[in-house]
Image (tube, rainbow, N blue to C red; front, side, top):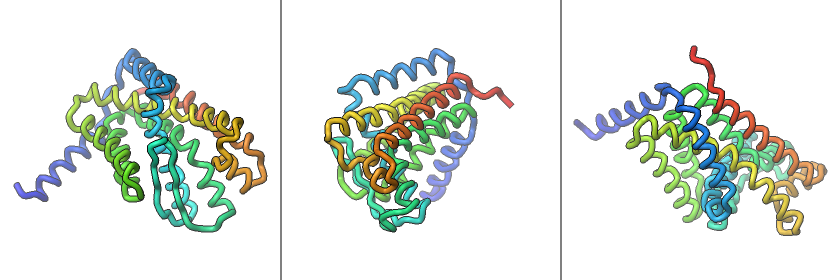
Length: 246
């Protein structure tokens, strides 16, 4: 078999696995995944490591919003302190800049909500492969070594899970990742306000939005919290009350 035939065979297997619905796990598995994700978010030493995944979604959200609003994406940097920077070129003010700035903090929760929608329809394995594809696209925009390492490690872990584990294990991982995105989206918003209250985040997205719109930064923090908490509640309900079979 030629190299191209091997590649085509692998792609075919991935496509079949990704587009074939699987039975949802038991409520015990879904709740265990939620408990594990909650522990990762709440236990600070663990959170400091896992937060890099939220930063990837945050900066990816900025990047997608920039492209969708007609801005030119120049690159994304991810740093070892869990901060990040997305650079886009375009008008310094206006709707495009507002949307691009706004999306970062709500992106992890919205990605989690989309993931919950896929789980609701039985596409747990498809979700894992979709996340791999999104990380591969993000990789093209990374402009520093730590960011490259962070995205590669995340993507490689998902590929290993999606290729080598059985359906039940893949489903459990997909549920844990989704719960983590939903719950992990909320804590950075709370941390943002704590930093702002201590005068440690004058250049935050909320403050940038305040300068762009003349709406107080605390209002934007409230909107971030409303969206992320709302996504967590709705996504959690979708996970625990899966759609009835067609």
